[in-house]
Image 1 (cartoon, rainbow, N blue to C red):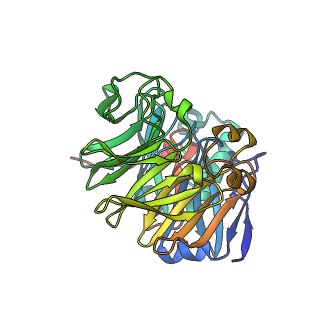
Image 2: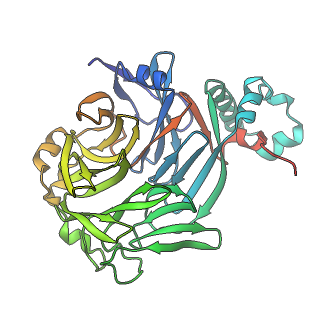
Image 3: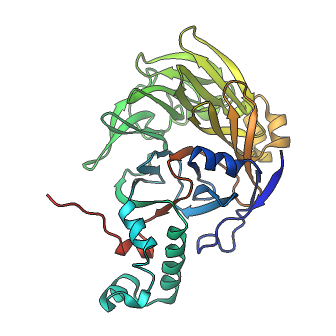
Length: 390
């Protein structure tokens, strides 16, 4: 496997920061052939990472958010959980076409009032505008920020769209919740061992697997029912919970994350072991599919392809005293790994060598090899309109 060096696309968010990486030479080919791109969140680096295939090479683009974690993506939507908000982005083909046709190429051609109101005539905003125009022209899909809900600091972890809206893992209150514009959150499910809703992160509930439009499994670090009690039980005290039956189906897991239902099996990260496990609900047994050099966390699938994230461990993490500690401390890497789910073999990888040390979640943007994301604060977003008429 040949590794190549990559540097992120140049923009105002990456100046003076080292987000360099190396990748397997087959990775851009795989993404291009499948017609997909990857997204990853790094709360430590406070970035959403866009992994795109560009003319046979790999490009990583960075978008700044406060503590980005839970992530969802499909053809038409990207949803992101941050420090105290959930942000929803929608695909706008019209906006990208307008930009590609050159309608926004001339800053001077904009009405003077729009220039003054939106950008204040400040030089750095004009520079941002021009960079964004170029970036959108190089993309094949554009996602615009459309809705934001403020939740308070509920320690959002996994998120997922279901039949009745968005589900969020609320680690602070040890519950799964739905979101409403009228409340910080609507508590919808708690593990059987949690006695009350209080903002004290009792068991470190973190992972959620959706199935048939509803939460089906969840992961937690322990069965603690006391404030921050999971911290006293770090190690192999994690659990996989059947949400529908509200019972523990697998215990003794080392710091589990990212449960996912796929092809009648349940996959989850045994993060403290740097491993991925496969649970078979029919027989109630689990096995190790693969071990990776890092704290495994973040998982998604595309057919028989599994995509998993790893994070580095620090020397101070030795106090966690979890199984596999020595191996992970010696060889842990931050990266994104593509595996064959039938064999657990690594097919391709992307590893970060600079300031990115942690990956939390991973998602796939389908039918797009080069997506672009615009936030409401971006200069260009003030001039793109997607509307309908009754």
